[in-house]
Image 1: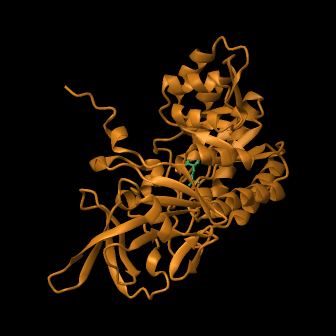
Image 2: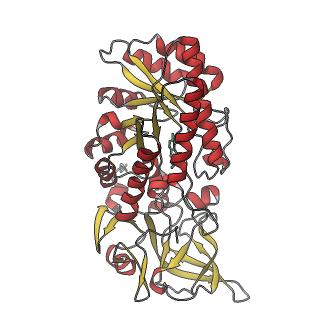
Image 3: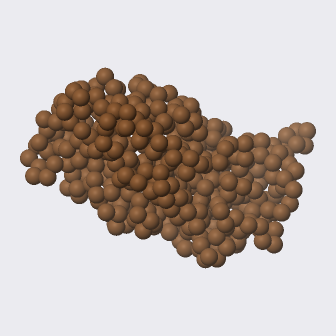
Amino acid sequence: MDVWPETVAVRDGHLAVGGCDLVALAEQHGTPLYVFDEVTLRGAMRTYRAAFAAAYPAQHRVHYASKALLNTALAQIVAEEGLGLDVVSAAELRVAQRAGVPMEHVHLHGNAKSALELERALAWNVGAIVVDNLDELAHLCALTAHRPQPQGVLLRLAPDIAAQTHAHIATGSSDAKFGLPLAALDAAVTQLLAAPGLHLLGLHAHIGSQLFRLDQLQATVQVLLEAAVYVRDQYGYTVTELSPGGGLGVPYTTEQPPTDICGYATMLAATLTDACTRANFPLPRLTIEPGRSIIARAGVALYRVIGRKYAPDGRLLYLHVDGGMADNLRPALYGARYSALLANRAAEPADTVVAVAGRYCESGDILLRDIALPSGASGDVLAVATAGAYTLSMASTYNLVPRPAVLLLAGGSARLIQRRETEEELLARDIVL
Ligand SMILES: Cc1ncc(COP(=O)(O)O)c(C=O)c1O
C-alpha cells in the first residue's frame, strides 16, 4: 500500500485519508480535487532529516525541490520542518519569502534564469545561486561586480551519467540541457575565482528524477568529489559544499520498489565519507534536494466519473472523468502509470479493466490505461494515488478549465490551502477589443 498516504483507510466502503471521507470532500469541494495527507507529508520530511542526521553528522541540508509542487502552505510546512527550499523562478522566490523560509536556506536553480530572477535572488540574499552555464556566470559576474557581500554559488555540473529513467527526466548526460560539461569546469572556476562579487561554495549535479538505481547516485557523488579534488589540486581552492541533487524514486504501482530514504542517506553518506578519506578532503556540507519523494505519496487526486464509452461488442472501453492532462500531464507526457480506486466503492472487487479518459481535447489525454476497478458508473469518485508530485505544478488551463482546489487533511479535518481557480480569473488577462 506504499502508493497511498500513510493514513489511508476504508470506512463504510469509502476511501478515507487523514481521517476524512474522500467522497464527502469531493461532494463538498467539487472535483477535480487534490488532497494532501499532512502526516505523510511531514513524515517524509522528518524521515529525510533524521536519516541524514544519523548517516552524515557532518553538516548537511535537506532542501525540498519546489518544482514538484509549491504553494504557500506547503512552503510554510517546509520552513516549520526545518528544510530549505529550491526554487526556479521569481514567483517561487516570493512564495518562499512569504512563507517565512529563511533566505539563506533558499537556492535558485534553472538553466535559463532571467535577469529579474537573478536580481531578485541577489537582492534577497539567497543562500546560493546554482550556476548552470558560462553565459549565466558571465551575467552574474557583471551583476555582482560591485557587491559588498559576495553571493554564494554552486556550479551545476553535467556528470555524464545517463540515469536509468524516462528520457524526459534524465538530466545528467553531458548533452542534456542542464549543467556545465566537465570540460568547462576550468573555464568556470577561473572566472569564478576572479569574480569579486561571487563566492564559490561548491559543486552540484542532478542526474534525473524517479531513480531507483542507487549506484548511479553513488557515481554522481564520486564525480562531484573528483571534481572538487581537481579544483583543490589545480587552483588551491577547497569547496565546502557538494550537492548530488534529488531524484529518489517512488512507487506509483505495486510492481515498483518502495522508497528507501534511509538506504539512500546511508549510501550517499558512506560514499562521500570514503571518497573524502581517500582523497584527504575535508568533509563538505552535503545538500540534497528531494522533491517527488517528499510530496508524491501524500497527494491523492479526486475526479468525478462523468460517463462511459463502450466498444461495438459491448466491452467497456473508457470511464470519462472531469480532469486529466491539464491537472496531471505525466501520463500524456511520458506514459506515467498510476494506481487508482473508486473512492465510493473502495471495498468492492476491482473486476473490470478499463481506461480512464481525461476530459481534454487530445486523444493522448488518457489518465490510466488498463486499470482494474469495480464496474463504475457516472457519479462515482475516482481516486488516483501518488498524485502529489509534478501534477499541479505543471497544471495548465487548457480548454479554459479552472485549476483544481487543494486541501490539507489531518486528524479528520480538511483545510483549504489553495482554492479552485475561477472563470473570472481565467478571463482576467484578456483584453476585449
Ligand atoms: C536540480 C534539481 N534538483 C532536484 C530535483 C528534484 O528531483 P526529484 O523530485 O526527483 O527528487 C529536480 C527535479 O528534477 C532538479 O531538477
